[in-house]
Image 1 (cartoon, rainbow, N blue to C red):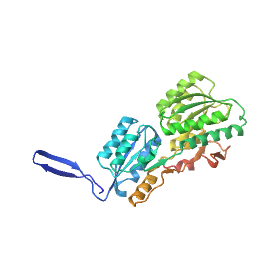
Image 2 (cartoon, rainbow, N blue to C red):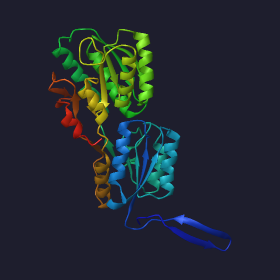
Image 3 (cartoon, one colour):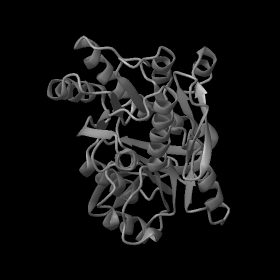
Image 4 (spheres, rainbow, N blue to C red):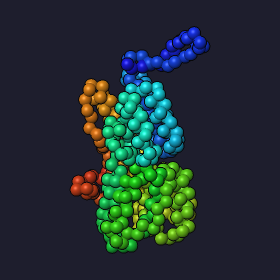
Length: 342
């Protein structure tokens, strides 16, 4: 049943010799349609899958970097189906448009595990399970921290002007994090959301967007809400190039971010990013648990969230409450950074 690549000659009277791939019984084949390589987070995510789903661990991993091309990702999944992979893992570039190809996988009897971003489908039985982050909760945590921080520093009643450098539009990470901020701006009447513009989760686009926002809004920006670390790096470059400062003081532009990569947390320690809300990329072990459960004939939970933290540059706020639950805030130091796996 399980397959390892080898070459097998098939002969037919009217056909020339053909080579056809087959797999040994001792390896579980997994196809992973990865979004791309747009960020440090994505690089860490890819490496984690390669580490977990290695031949030494009993797997043959076919990983396709789709380079943020939705059509290429659909093609990759169809290729996995044609190869009769044992399992298909998809990190969707976009949330919509998955019904047809997921139905094809189901018809082929191949379990599909969705990771990272969510999919919008007419029937959630089209996929077996989902593993990832609660992106809207991430946004709520970040907004709750900002509110508490402003109150602690005597700015709770000030007019606060915010710009949102969004992720790739339509990605569930963008949808959730944007919604978390938008809802907070509606609740806090003195928060003004001046602009929302996509930075496509990349450093170069984040810098480009920030340059444009600085020209449009000049000295009006108090907070930059970046929907991942790489956008934050670009935004910081643009802000400093414009002769303005990032930091934790009243006269600084406060830069907020998501992901909490080692590089991002280094900027938190240095005070360049005031808050970094974690989005844990190490999904591989949780996906492997699901595959092992399926191999044993068990039914895994439909949705499985990974554990995530909140990291700050300052100690003013010790914890925040979001969706009725308290979350501790960790102040970043060298020990925290050294302990990061990505």
